[in-house]
Length: 274
Image (cartoon, rainbow, N blue to C red; front, side):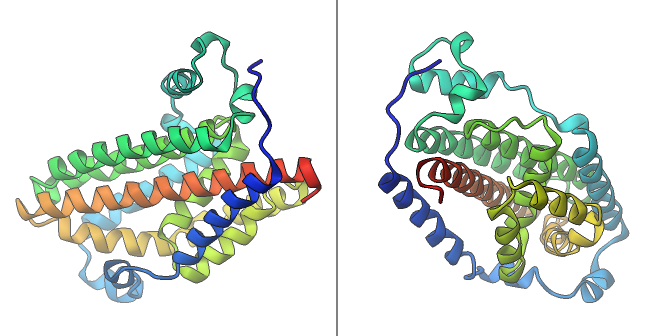
């Protein structure tokens, strides 16, 4: 067991305040994000059937991920290696229980490294699949889903949560929803997740997820609109790089902040019955 000095409540409250400021900033959607919220009835008329089919498959795979993890469960070695390096211990000596007790500042450091790495990967991936326009979207959409779920699972691990458990898969999907929801949707998700670890609340969130197709209508609208731009051959390189980069940046930030908040609230509850 790694021995570390416990964090003080004041430090945790300071970190919590920064997260709450970030949550408030989510109301200021950028122009392209607002454009992505146009009603699906309008979007449906201008979106090719190919994109509808691909995003329908995308949603089916999310449903499979919630239930079993499917093909998207990650190998944990990379995260363990980075965390072990950060605390200067052998990888074999590090357990998930140890990770859960690490200082928030160290979790922040490693999560930033992981976020940057995945943003870079997404940028290259989007540019590459943008070369062929509509013909390479069939490769890009499942690849982007896989990268989104991978970075969120890594954020779970960095904060000491087991990503292979169904409970964490549900939390991860809520983070994915949060990244593309409008401000009202974000506030609803924050309310759900603020008490996620209470037994009754977990059942309520699971019940909500059973209607995941309806829950993801907003995600579909936003995502489908962005992918329209990537269909233009050659120009799609620029759009693809930007779309994938911004998507993973938003997804990673959501997972980073929401998992950090969850860990901080649990520690404050232990210290002062918060």
